Structure formats: C-alpha cells, structure tokens
Image (cartoon, rainbow, N blue to C red; front, side):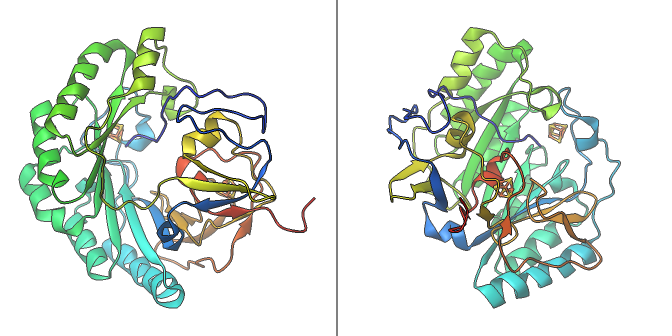
Length: 345
Ligand code: SF4
Ligand code: SF4
C-alpha cells in the first residue's frame, strides 16, 4: 500500500493570493466558503477506506513494518459482513447513498476470504475498489474482476515482475478504471522510470502516476536530484483519458460572492488553502475509515474520534461535523464537501 501524493509545480504564494496553477486556471483572490464535488454523483458516494489487516506479500524497504508485518490479524468475515449490512441500511436505504468500499492492507487480496467479501459487497449493490500490489496470479484476478469497479495497482520494483504486472493490468483495464502508481526510489530511479514507460506503452487505457517516496510514508521526501524531481513533476502522460467511473475527482471551490474554481486535491495542498477549521465537513456522511485494528472513524483525519469498533457497536454518523484541525492533509479527506457556517465570522 502506498499513500497518495504527487509532486507538481504550481506557483504557491501567500494565503489566498491570486495564483496560477499548472493547469493554467487563474484562481480567485477571495477565500472559499464552500468546497463541493464537481461531479454531484460524488456527493452521494460514501467512500469507505477499509484496511483489512497488515499482512503483505512484499516487504518494501521504504514501507513501515506496521503496514506489512502481519501483526494485525485479518478481520473476521462475519464482522465485516455485519458492517456491510449496517452500511446498506444506514447509507443506501435510509439516505439514498452509494457505498464505495476501497480495501487496503497490507495486501488486501491476501485476506483468506477476500473473494467472499468482494462477492457479498457486489451483491449488496456496493461499488468496490482495491489498492493492491497486483502480486496474486492472473487466475485469481480473473476470479474477482467481476466484483470490482476499479483498482489502484502499485508497482513496487523491488519485488514486482513487470510482465506479470502488465498481464494483470491488461486483464483488468478492459473492464474497469485502472490507476497505476509507480513508486520511484531515487536509487533505482532510471530503471523504474524505464519500467513506468513500459507500463505506459502496454496499458494505454490506465492512468499512471510516478510516486515520489516519503521517508516512513511521513512528510519528508527521499533525497531526489533536481533532474529526478523534474521527471516526477512531468509524470508519464495518459494517451487515452480514463472514462471509467471513480468515487472522487475534482472539487468546485466557491467564494462568498459566488466566484468558482475547479481544483484537484493537490492544488489545495500546494497552495496552502487546505485549511477549514470551523467549517462543517461531511466526513462520516461521504466517507468512513476502518483501521486494521477494527477501529471505525469518520475519515483519515480522525475528527470526531472513534465512532465504533468492528464486531461491536458502531454509531454511523447522521450529520456533518465541525472541523477542529488546522489543516486537512489527506487527499481523500480534502475531496469531501465542506462549508463555512453562515454565522461564523
Ligand atoms: S506492497 Fe505496499 S504494504 Fe506491501 S510492503 Fe510494499 S508498500 Fe508495504
Ligand atoms: S481535517 Fe477532517 S474535518 Fe477537517 S476539513 Fe479535513 S476532512 Fe474535514
């Protein structure tokens, strides 16, 4: 599993200065008072970030042990299915929402009952994604592909085999949205970049991101040369735009006077405008996080605290919550509806 981060080089000046991002869009000078999904369907979607356990088929050198050493047991199938039914009733039936499960690990395909978990989610009308290293056999992917709506495959070249990864990608890309992250270690940069270009050529319908690595998956970047940073910023362009369905995309940011900009999650981070303390935020209504330990939260940021435990009582949220954090760091969290309360100064 890798976390989401992408180096781009927009102009990041002062807070709410007029700015130009790399997409060439000129942005307003006023603070934004509403952040909404550009695609209204995404406001209906409850994106569930679900870590099933922390066992993995790889042990990447840059991955903290706690994310792959198997010290957290796989979650019990009956507990997972119980929460499925609670979500179906709370979100889908009572609120007309679409539940989109996104399983992570460790390597989520190693869960001993993963096929049953995917099959049942699909039968309940949920959409399902996996964040995977693609290491399982093509036969396995063949078995599960009908239960998937999209995948994020991460290419870790310390362990992955290029031909196998391409075979899995080709099997899936005809049927669903496939995004590929290529982890770019500075000491294996050239070889990995060649492999990323080979993936680009073999899988023209997939989107690909060159992922800069951060030490311990925290905020500090590995020591990249300027040339490497330029390549990371440029990426490997998609030759065919992905037309598959996705749970999230861009956000529409609106000011009090009605000026609007369309921004990606990274635009908020890199322009330092990901600050919504005091705003009402729809985490828990549009998102949920289940940690490997089974602890249930509204979102990655943890605002609102623990709302329950897998296998025990879970109080699924019925209302938005006021943000208490000075900044919003996670991409998935940023891509959630927020609004400044009318009464706030
Ligand atoms: S594949 Fe992902 S979870 Fe597994 S060791 Fe590598 S980075 Fe960690
Ligand atoms: S930190 Fe959490 S509560 Fe605050 S804006 Fe971000 S997602 Fe919402």
